[in-house]
Length: 192
Image (cartoon, rainbow, N blue to C red; front, side):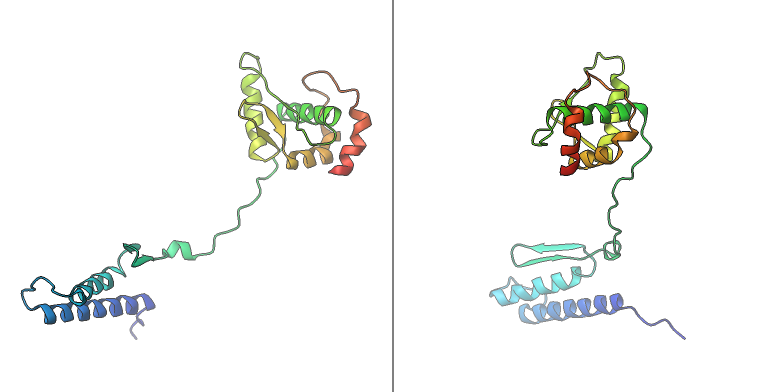
């Protein structure tokens, strides 16, 4: 038993039959060989024939403000999976050092969370490349962001992550420890 024609086949067939009909109508009105169209109606038959001929074989067809048609591609019709949150990977010592510095300084200096503490290492620092690589990974996970001057700061997601995991952070950090950290910690944890 033969295979049943698909809907696409019938759509192409209908479009090309309509194209042939409008071309025949144009030629009937203009004669053979066609003379220059005298009225707009003659030209509209030729345009309609052209549109119906191209409709099944083009992905986009635009004719001024009159026609703007875009064919959905077959790949676009399949449902796309929802983008997934970047997964949290095990942290390196440098990533923990960045997170610990940002967390301790944020809690100690700006516990109201209206200002975000930021810092950076200069390119002359011996650990600059490792710092940048670790920072890029943390940005990829959405835990930190970078200012236009290259300073790192915690995002809201990063603040919540630190609030849940700060006890796991090694003590290693840049700068001096903030004395007000312990006093402000419970206030910040309640906000997050």
